[in-house]
Image (cartoon, rainbow, N blue to C red; front, side, top):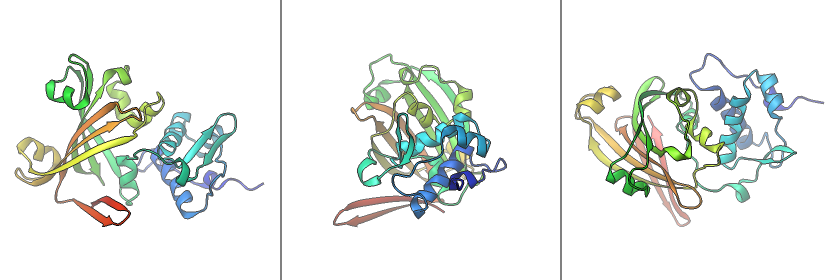
Length: 258
């Protein structure tokens, strides 16, 4: 019997792209190209670990992200199958790593700050939190091909993942960690404003003070309407273009990195 095509793939230890993201990219490419058809069974976790020489956690991160995007579905006792996007894709899908990787570029992140805080009234109001609720606040510099692109600060209620550490955040996708405790993005509200960067922001992004940028805010909700993520970011205006398409069927939005 022929070996499954995914098992013939090779992951690069020398790449800046995390192993789980490389595996996500391989499977997404095979699905989009038609090489993997709807209903097709993927190799088991143990097969992927053994043949691709990766950890079980790497495989689970990859499959979790694909399932969140509605590309695969897990059936208890049977395995993981390519899903029908017309019937299973729900909610919102976003990953900086896969967004950048899909453009043929190398994503990476540098953690600037990580702490547990009691947020002020403005953050509590945005996230519909009770006063005194502890939240994680962490700031990252998102990079593309090694060059800073986004200065991103995120807030998450501590109770959704009580044991998060700085080390875990530096070695794992937080979305994948949340997936394993049943928290997935269902809806998001985004806003963009044109701003200029102050000296500190510009220094972290490697541009001159006063440079133009997009100030981006996102509130992400679970299916039952609970806000579990508030992110505010400064995105370099010299590297990013926002495209909006309007058609009879609706509006499309794309973010292009140049």
